[in-house]
Amino acid sequence: MVAKQLSVFIENRQGRLHEVLDVLKLNKINILSLSLADTTEYGLLRLIVNDPEKGKDKLTFAGFSTMTTDVLVIKIDHKAGSLQGLLENLSDRGINIEYMYGLSVDGEDAFVVLKTSDLEEALQTLKKIGVTTLSTEDLKDIK
Amino acid sequence: MIWNKEIECMSRDELSALQSERLVKTVKHVYDNVAFYRKKMDAIGLLPGDIKGVEDITKLPFTTKDDLRDNYPFGLFAVPHSEIVRVHASSGTTGKATVVGYTEKDIDIWSECVARCLTMAGVTKDDIIQVAYGYGLFTGGLGAHYGAEKVKAMVVPMSTGNSKKLTTMMVDFGATAIACTPSYLLYLSEVLEQEGLKDKIKLKAAICGAEPWTEKMRKDIESRLNINAFDIYGLSEVMGPGVACDCIYHNGLHVCEDHFLPEILNSDTLKTQKQGELGELVFTTITIQGLPLIRYRTKDLTNIDYSTCECGRTSARLGRFKGRVDDMLIIRGVNIFPSQVEAALVNVKEVSPHYMMIVDRVNNLDTLEIQVELKTEYLTDEIKGIEKLTAKIGQVINQALGISAKIKIVEPNSLKRSEGKAVHVIDNRKIF
Image 1 (cartoon, helix red, strand yellow):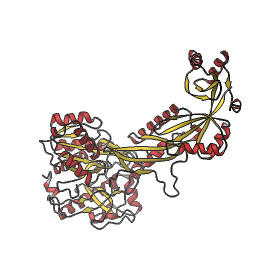
Image 2 (cartoon, chains in turn purple, orange):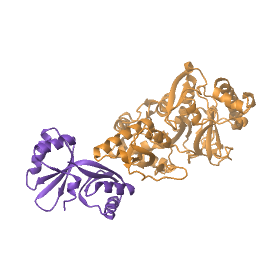
Image 3 (cartoon, chains in turn red, green):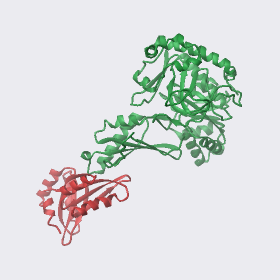
Image 4 (cartoon, helix red, strand yellow):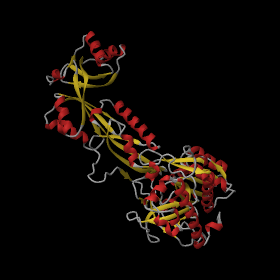
């Protein structure tokens, strides 16, 4: 299963990030995790939210350039080495990580968000080694 | 020093008679050999015989850069191809180049004109001159080169692109003169300063052109390098550099009037301006054989002074250039029209046709940034995707303009829309 990530292109202008967050707040869209890839000219804001489609519509309406991307949200044990072990399995099969960020919640579990070079291959690999991935639906229950 | 005293100091009456004789010949030459001119003259019922002297020039129709483009590549040449010994080309308004052809005699005239300019700048056969204009289709390099050879100076054909080699040779060779764009010379002065070479150079004169510059910039160059800096003017359609140059009195640019007949017109009414009034500079070539131009609208704004200069030359002098009638930009010596950017971007499906050009001068070098709007459907969630697109647009622009530009991708609909005439350029250079 895959989750939808919301990506927003933002120019490096004062207040632009704030405006994105404003739109999300006004529409009661909850952010579960985010990562900002920045360059000197612009940034790519990647968000895991409880309702990505609504987020995309509202941000587009507000004039932002947005898109959704399928990503893997993986639950891993909150202990040393668990992420390393997971990535080793992907790496062994020639799957590259395009980017990755954490999604941490209270409790014993931790989550990582992964974008890989080959989504299907990554999903099968994870299935084989018994790792479950979460869908956007599943994420709605995460508090 | 005066290269051709007989011509350059000729009385205005004698000059006028010479110009009249040459104009009459030129009009007949183009009527007989260029269909474009014949049609234009026929359309207004004008016969070559109606032009009896310079006083009749206003009867002739105008020629524009668009006419050159429409007759690309050789449509306006007035001699068979076999008579053309060289061509140069400059950028046109829509990507199509403007091509100029020269006969052997045209090249001689050009060399003569540049020789006059170099002599005004004090360059003689005893000098070593570095020509640091681009060699190639651009008229600057070869134009200056042939003129410098004509005065029998030792010519070092540097071309552009290697400042380190240039400064090294300037010192090692003991170069006494340089021909390059003024902004590049300012940049070079900084390089020389940084490398501690400023006291080791023997430079005494610089002949700068190919882009507009201010009197302040000229004086700045003079004091930084302790040299005399001269302003040379020309445009690729009308021969190239050497059409006019200023003398040591820096009181306007002496036009080689026995070859190029200048007019200053009100750019709205196209009527002749009073002496000294600002207007559009229009040239008629009166000796050129390959690509003679009748009343060619340069789109450059200036004024003219017909009084005799302190240097003794009687030739008319053009004042400092005050801008352009059209939206052409000169960036690093290269003519750029915003429409070229527009034409290039149409082929890039990922961006909208809206764009903004931001021109600036950083450390005395022109910079160009082009902002383009990314279409949302081509958004990517990876930085490398956007970087790839930036590089691709950079290549397309470089191909179209002949200079590199920094591409900045901006959000959709973020560039200012205009209800009237679209504003596509912000020029922060203050060059006029």
